[in-house]
Image (tube, rainbow, N blue to C red; front, side, top):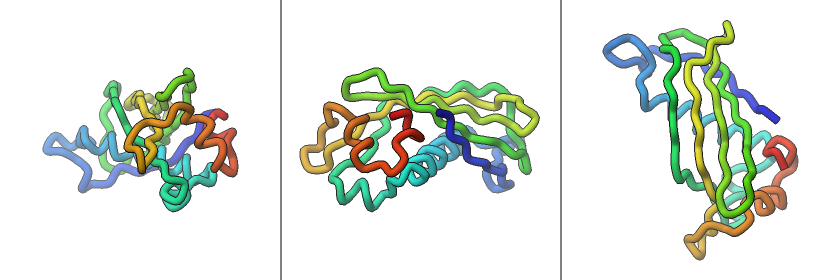
Length: 138
């Protein structure tokens, strides 16, 4: 299932060339991932009380088209569960006209906050605390 969050590019996020600063793409992607967790019923307080937290291990961004101030984009998230300690979230930033501005692939794990190690089955740990695990592809 693909989840989407709308974002409008703000003027203070632009670089000297007048397009979205490259670091802000990371912020948009992370914002969408946290909104997805919240929509699935997994807020930060629930993660902390469960003794776990998501950790980003790798991020790859492909910039396709520039974003400028006032552009409206949908930032998508789609989980890919391969088994093991890690999983992927594929994301797109798509303008309202359908143009893909960026593609993001993130490799993540779920960390046990006491042991400071990745849990062996992150999907099961999230499924156990999610109110809507289908949003997570579970």
